[in-house]
Amino acid sequence: MRIDVHSHLMSIAFLEHLRRRDAAPTAVRDGTGYIAHCEPGLSLPYRAPILTVEAKLAEMDMAGIDLAVLSCGMPGPAMLGGAQADDWAARINDELAAITAAHTGRLAGWANLGFGGLSETIAEVDRCLDQLGLAGFQVWSNVGGRPLDDPGVLPVLEHIVDRGAAIHLHPAPPPGPQGLAPAMMLGFAFPVDTSLAVLRLIAAGLFDRDPVIIAAHLGGVLPWLRERIGLWSHAIPALPGQPQPTRSVGECLDRLYVDSVGYGPAPLDYCYAQLGADRMLFGTDHPYGTPSLPRDLIEHMPLTQAEREQILAGNAQRLLRLAAVPARRI
Image (cartoon, rainbow, N blue to C red; front, top):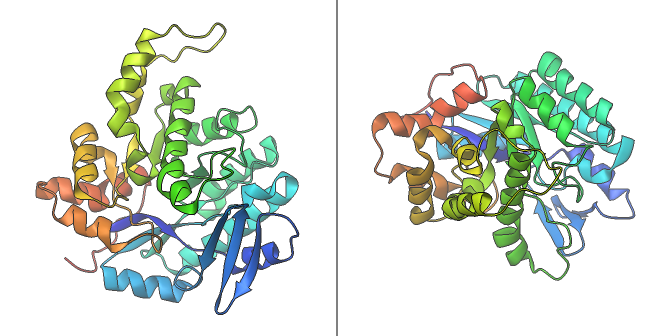
């Protein structure tokens, strides 16, 4: 059985809204799809299968994916800012809930959050869990340039964790990326920003609450720098007035979950050696990158059958509280 925790579907209604905007984020029609201008220097093309459920399901069948947990691609609604961000997050969540309800056992959803207003965003967290039945929350590595320990962001994440819901931490363009070519942005700056976001949340004490945080793309650079980060967290005195987490940075990193979206066997093997099979969840980043490669790499890892089943489906079922569904293929 395979559960893909990192799979994107864009709302056409949201893209049409972006077409009417004069400033980034905006979108334009491009033949049978769209081009989203997320910010200066970063534009992304959107065509099927990211625009239609039917195309998504067809490609899942070809790849042997039993269930996909869908999330919004960039730009997310939070990039709109203010009440508009909260409004569009709720609209996209309604649309996603309807899609997943119509395809129970095949599709689940990561909810969106606008972070326009603190009380409004916390209320949307509860609505997504109590009324819409979404599996958890996609949170970007920064919210329109605001770090995740910002006073307007952190209380929302604390509320999600206190509700026992999972967070999929997805990369976003870091603040001040002017001049970075798209390859540098997507290939390097994205995973670095994810890593910085995790470290900010550790310093803010969120990991003292035992969160379920799944960092995209093998956890950015954190598995490779885990020992160095742990060393320097002890070697440098804490800043005066800063909260002191109960757990060390190393202990917190040991509690991080990651998805398996990677593009070579060595990084995947190293991540497994650092974290173990119970901290890894299968993901493809469909339709970006090379979505078949993460699946092929896991198939060739020297895992026990129990470990392979954990990564491919078991961890996702447990952490996202997904109902068991029959595997569609062996």
